Image (cartoon, rainbow, N blue to C red; front, side, top):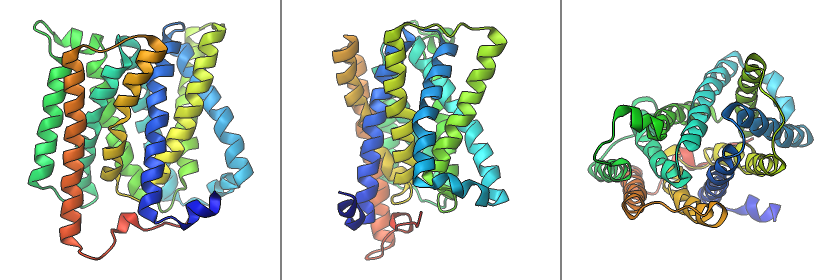
Length: 319
């Protein structure tokens, strides 16, 4: 199996890794919502990332990736601090949005705003280009978001109170983190990026638990949901997503990851027995379509720009 993966074209590897990240992230929405129904926000953050550290650290030690940390340059260490702070903000707001929302599928649909921010930041900082097809995709995505969040009497307080505003801010921080990680992916191994993210969030969660004198007693079912979700999320998803960036463009991963909402929808129905309204489902499908159109536009532009020449981001980068 390992030899089979090694022989795959770099672009195919990137697509497989992005799809694994998508499946993992879809389960994060479901398991985290299930856990947050039984524990408070601070207990959840502590246990979720404690389990994540338990899964990730032994893996990095066994594979020898942990030995790469002392050899990192000063510039790489500064990047890790920046990425850690960004990921702390993005993850904290994401889980706050999931806790406040009635249905995690809605938050998953709204997180499709992230590709818009990634595209805009990629233009500014990675020298990527923008075209008419991408503009159509952006308009579709925004239109879908409007349908998802539309109610006649929605106030700014309700917008944040139901989680929508927080996932918007989370998407901004997440996008900046993705672009920053992409710019340093040749120098910082995906495993180190994953560990860095977990340490930042777990440290903040531990400090919050101590300062608030929170109890660590939680129901067994919630503990199971947090253990399972953290294995699929902070470990599998983060590792796969960062690894995918070694082989394909940051924007291309979004066309795959946008489909996670469909898996969240199925998981929410099966595990939580909740379903969005027809208007929310319609808006969600439009956001997915928007992301697909936006990414197809970028891919078409890259083909026209460099006919017959593989993209720099699609080349394999040594670990």
